[in-house]
Amino acid sequence: MTTAEVQCHTTHGYTPEKTAYLRRLKLIEGQVRGIARMVEEDQYCIDVLTQVAAATSALKAVSLGLLNDHLAHCVADAARKGGPEADEKLDEAMQAIKRLVK
Amino acid sequence: MTTAEVQCHTTHGYTPEKTAYLRRLKLIEGQVRGIARMVEEDQYCIDVLTQVAAATSALKAVSLGLLNDHLAHCVADAARKGGPEADEKLDEAMQAIKRLVK
Amino acid sequence: MTTAEVQCHTTHGYTPEKTAYLRRLKLIEGQVRGIARMVEEDQYCIDVLTQVAAATSALKAVSLGLLNDHLAHCVADAARKGGPEADEKLDEAMQAIKRLVK
Amino acid sequence: MTTAEVQCHTTHGYTPEKTAYLRRLKLIEGQVRGIARMVEEDQYCIDVLTQVAAATSALKAVSLGLLNDHLAHCVADAARKGGPEADEKLDEAMQAIKRLVK
Image 1: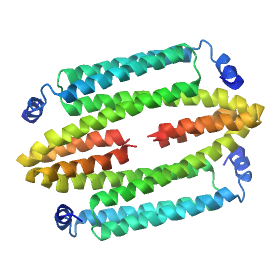
Image 2: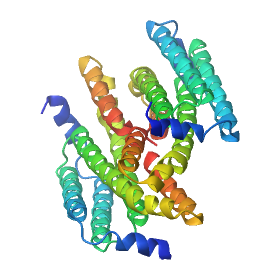
Image 3: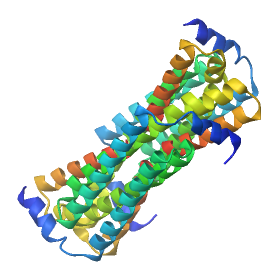
Image 4: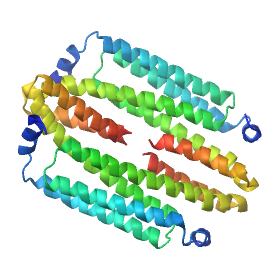
């Protein structure tokens, strides 16, 4: 872990956002378990697909939330400090955005 | 549930595909639990995002598999029988594809 | 080109759908030209991005339309005839759907 | 246009990036025209879909490039200055990312 990453972390700490993310991930875990149950019970494919789409959307929403927090804290902090680290943080964030867009 | 859906179901039954889907969904459930643990432990945002992207891709792969099975069985059966049900099944599949593409 | 593709083609011919697709593609071409003009005039990035997103959505809508027609004609015809060609057509359509979903 | 937007603009000016974007958009315009020609000539649906997917990918790549430039210049500048404008720029960029991810 680089110094930059450590600095990013210390700005996180215990936050209301963290609790909200954990709750959302718990819900998604339940959705995935529900999908398995639907498959187990041979429920209609299209209904299963609808639930998979809902879980996928929920995961994407989590990604967008995490990305927003990351840009607002780590990337913005790096931009304020400037130097090569600012570019590095931006490149890293862009790679994450590309994975999201695919 | 319409007669068409029931007919689709009876062609499913216990299949090796079903076992494979259940295993894949179990893995995705574990991935989501792992993401929650990463958030809990304040791991680096970008690493969390990478795992969320992996879980999202895995869910999309499940969707594509289910869609393939659905087109190969229910939609193809309906096409062979013809009539309004064939159109209905296709429309329904297209709606599912649209949700996937978004 | 295989016999199957030729058969698919002959069912197309001149259709009102074709005229509609050509009109939509003309509009998209104009959108792309408009985006180039915005870049040329140094318009605000976010406004350019909004227009790129609109053109991307319009292209996706064309894809979904073409896919719908393809499933309703070529893939359904192949399903009715059965045999290896039915599987082939479905695989080919699934590959196209995968490219769309990415 | 707000003062912030004007400031963003003045940092653009004539750049090698601009020339590259214009060339890429020209190519995409040609791709879209090629797709129209394929539809006109009743070419095989799947081949048309492949070209539509290629044009869509090319547009997405332009979006990611523009977004990268925007984050590296406008959003980073705003972050350095701080204040409400920094939050505003980030929110605006996140909205653009959401449109891309959909």
